[in-house]
Image (cartoon, rainbow, N blue to C red; front, side, top):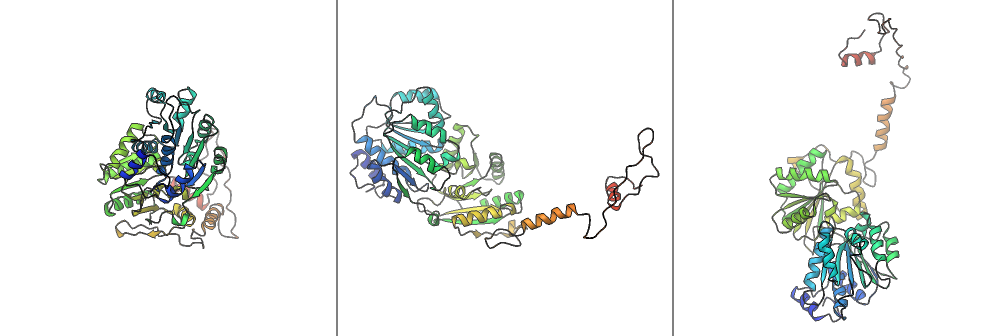
Length: 454
């Protein structure tokens, strides 16, 4: 059973029909505590079943009590992205199909008028992104005064995207007696302690993602690249030689993601590009095509790194190394899900070597080096490395280069004579003959400029 507590018959039947009777570790620990109406701070990797870990106890609590049709929203699920909101809403709709509960979805990019009308029907469960919900609160279109359960999913990403003020504004509009469940992929995120202390009341912490076990079903690989152009050749080679069902390619910038989309299409792969500047309808269509297998490759900025649960993604390529270890975890977490195996390949340029080593040490990863003669380059790693694995001598080399540009010659050499200002004639131009003697460096410069030495 997914919960030892007897569940509402309609909810239990749905879970049985879906084959979801055996709980995952996060469900096993979080559901009983949530049913005891305790505040929770849960650290769980995306893909571990955390959505059910908060939906099941929420639906159970609401379905088991008499409902007031005029009472307003009773449970609110806040998520950072529209894509994740849609996924949670679909899963919620399935679970409440045989209960008296109703759910509504509120996100940016959709009709405000339509969403306002939906809220007038007082859905018991509301799944929302923060920006649109704040708009509805400011216009008086949303009522959270009767809220019993507040759920914040992907709390660390909320912080990364700067949504903390919106989250706090929404929490202020709810009842102080509410139960709050907060889910995060990491517990050590800067700012998480502050926001959790503001929103949670004597919370129970559930930590289910020790670093050494985070991505055990994923093979982590690297390929060394000389520069961006070399990376593009390697990317084409991987897509043409690495067997995969669906592949995600990550870039650090939107512009680069757009360029890579065109490059991958050049390599004869059907590819889409997903980032924050895409219209909501376009993003929705891209994800549907990717999930349905009409598109095998999706290029994305980090907007797609969290929250997306797309089946059969068995290859993740980091065209750009992520900026932090946690970002690496979220990116590669799109593969190797539900016990299936996945491959994550990171392309590493000389400038990214030290960053790669930092991420490897932080996450305690075993990175396998991939090599192909077809796309072999010049960069095979730093010539000298420190005990940490990072490149050695970079500071010294920079200092030597700087010294070469400032020194006029070897130690003890006579300083180069300064050129005296040439006398001018009455018209103000230097005379053609009788000018000062040029040094060797100045003569060379004049030759490069196409001038004859005096």
